[in-house]
Length: 64
Image (cartoon, rainbow, N blue to C red; front, side, top):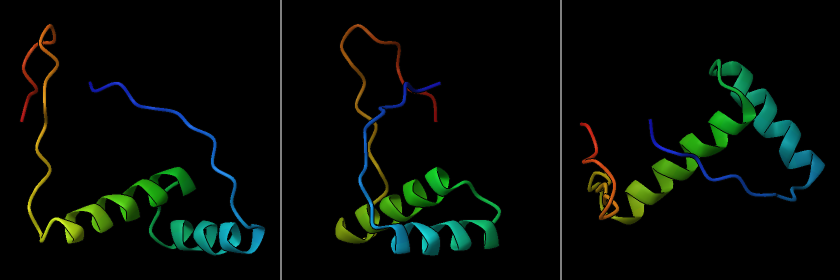
């Protein structure tokens, strides 16, 4: 499994409440909902191209 990056996010409480309600509607955690939305935005920015996984030189190849 790919290692996940942690970071601190400061967010407006009203926006948090909207994301929390949206996440509940879609049966996700708020973290999962934010990650889902960010992935959609990145894919849209790339013109619908799927994400390319780049392996580190000493890491085993990524599984599809």
